[in-house]
Amino acid sequence: MKYDHRAFAPALKAADAYGAGTAERIRRFVPMVRRLAWHVQGGGRPGIELEDLMQAGMVALTEAAQRHAGPGEDGFAAYAKLRVRGAMVDLIRRNVPLSRGAAERRRHLREKETVLRGELGRDPHPAELAAALGIGEGELESLRVATEPLRFEPIDETYSDSDPAFADDRPDSFALLADAELRESLADAIADLPERLQLVVQLYFVEELNLSEIAAALQVSIPRVHQIKAQAIEKLRAALSGQVDII
Image 1 (cartoon, one colour):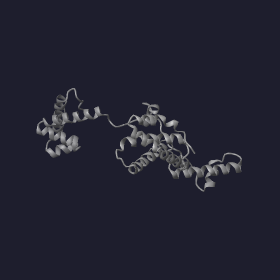
Image 2 (cartoon, one colour; image 1 turned 180 degrees about the vertical axis):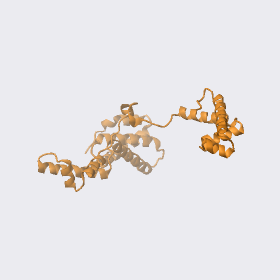
Image 3 (cartoon, one colour; image 1 turned 90 degrees about the vertical axis):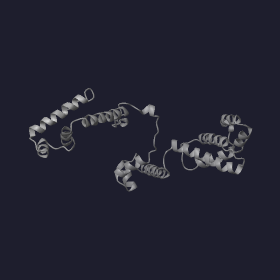
Image 4 (tube, rainbow, N blue to C red; image 1 turned 135 degrees about the vertical axis):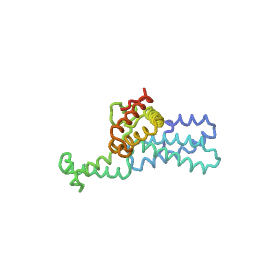
């Protein structure tokens, strides 16, 4: 079967800009692109036109001819075949992202639905279809979901600030930077406290001891611990004035 090369004239014309040698090499390998397109399309993946596969293959062939500097045609043939077939398979994966196993399960499901529709004279209920397949209704629903091809949509058409699917609860870069700066300032302020005040802050806020436990550790009264804690907080408030509120 002859294939009309006029659809690929732009690709061949563009190739001429890279020199007569490159353009001639592309023309010689157009039959290979056609054969690969027929082979790939015949692999049981409907939904992609032969012309689309040829177009993807011609683009890949042109790029291969431009990049392959070696004079040997055998080396170029192997390289071009790999690139062309890869481009066609990528096109199929982008447009029909369904594995062979999933495609087979989907075909079997549709065939069973067709048989039951003919026997019942109507669309089978999920329970009837599940029974015919020898599975539960839950498995049937999972099977339907698993055999549906993925849909890829442009992010600009689907993104929405109000859609929780796009929400991110991680703090942004500014919040992380501000938190780091605050921690550094707080650490410096605590380091400037007198040793006894530092110790009470450590025991109360870090070790999470209560006033009674701190009093026992320092061998002072509870009111004295409360006084030292109040002094420490007051000094931290003064040191961090305008940066953070210290309770």
